[in-house]
Length: 108
Image 1 (cartoon, rainbow, N blue to C red):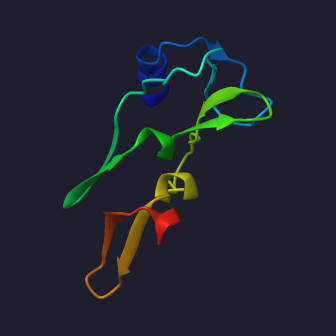
Image 2 (spheres, rainbow, N blue to C red):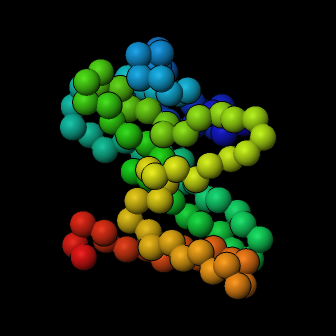
């Protein structure tokens, strides 16, 4: 469902993503225009995490493809390093809780 929503919501042609090993890529625009991507929010018990577009879409410099930095899985899901960038993440084992705080990690 998410893949279909991104294909519908991004105004770029879908590209063959086999060269980069990701599930969904688009042909990058030939100009330096900003690509509008649909919003992505992870819903957790007790809160929501709104991600900026550069936390789930990446530009592959070697191929020029604009790709979703997520893969389908069966069973366990992993919140990867691309999704975690520019967030401070606290794992509170006593309260059995994870919290996310936006941060500019390159300026710390």
